[in-house]
Image 1: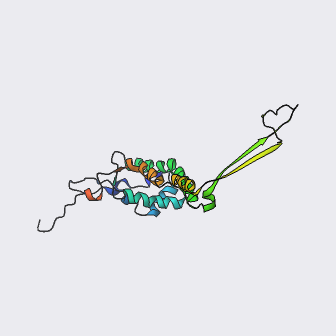
Image 2 (image 1 turned 60 degrees about the vertical axis):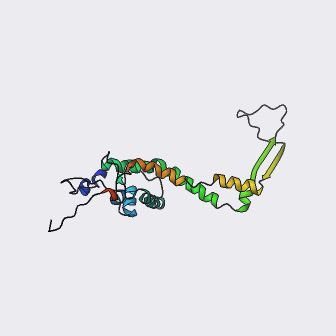
Image 3 (image 1 turned 135 degrees about the vertical axis):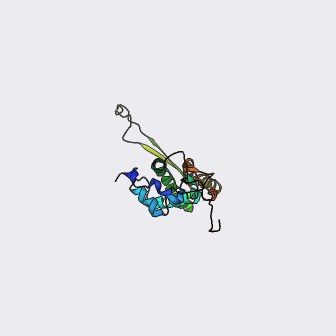
Length: 197
């Protein structure tokens, strides 16, 4: 079965206010569970570039941000799905790595926070000898080593400067063009009739 045959394009063809009107699905209707989202990601047209755990997290992040927004109606559903997973394929690995780095930074203990730069200076004197082809002298005659330590104020100022809270925001905003913010569940009109009508 072709990948694009998996999705029933007619699934969301309803009779609306006008006979035969089509309602564009929301993200929550496209993927009713994290399992459905994950299944399409793992078996999709793009190779996996983030872990399954982060894919589940991403589902809930997208659900929280765009859950009740209809998908952009300027493209067909299959193209929309391709664009969705192409964003994950392209930008997901950097998002995942940045999360890992931030987790490591948040785990630094006091000694690691106060630790400063280490500088090593080597000297070499080899009179009468030509330099190797790579220009690097293999032996050394002396070495100076400087170990620096930050004061608390500088250390914690540096730490707060490199802690980031908008890594996921930068990633989620890339999906914005895939949704129509002026539509969704609340914008749908439903007409109910009774036998008396």
